[in-house]
Length: 344
Image 1: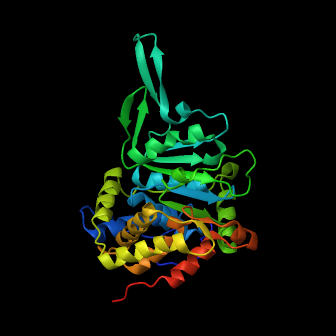
Image 2 (image 1 turned 180 degrees about the vertical axis):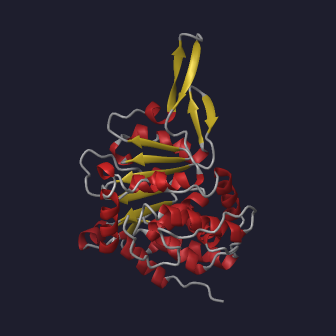
């Protein structure tokens, strides 16, 4: 496999890097080292998308779900499989289609002639990482089957509630190009996703490395998620989620997150602003970023870094801004420039 071109970040280089041993214990330093190892292992098969990897990892340890939007063939499935491999988690995939039924998502009960009783057949949602591929291709009734799963981490089949095994995260994908025959997600369901991450084409150097690495294997499978090493357990991920929840958020920084969310409701050109869940999401993701850097407190920079992926699916532009060519991200950036951050 050819050496991967250098990635401009503080993360460890990809191939051939000597990873430090995973440390046991609840300290933030050990957790940050563990998350660095996960990041480095995922980047061995998913190159050139540093911020996307960080956003997905932050969503996982924040206990949220992610909406991943990108064109086909950019490695979304590779990313989820590799992440699951790093902590030994179960992986489930659902290809959403117009004829998909809610029971195809959650599971159903089936009468077993041998035992003379109904048996529950669990659906693909019973996994640690669930890839809901092209979620907007299924009708609203099937989309809503994920609501209870995402919100309550449980599934109800024939009146019986079955808890999911933790950690659990849904990664739902959308294709931004093809809109024919799709069912746009309603605002109430979009709000269930902690982040909306946009996946773009990699830089030329990384794309050349990917092409060379994939084509070097038999049948064009030279870059496989099973090459990723397992560096921790699901229990370690759950522990990191507890540490994220315990990160300190001083009132001044919380107020800053609230001001950003409130500014989206009054900004010119925005028809629908972010609700309180948006401000909560800013603080949750900021805490995850702090833990990833070994800190037990959040800063305004953490909140600002979280703003675009946390808010871009929670606001709607007015028609005149859409016609003029403005984007949600550009409007959010202008809001971030005008909302004063706390100092000191």
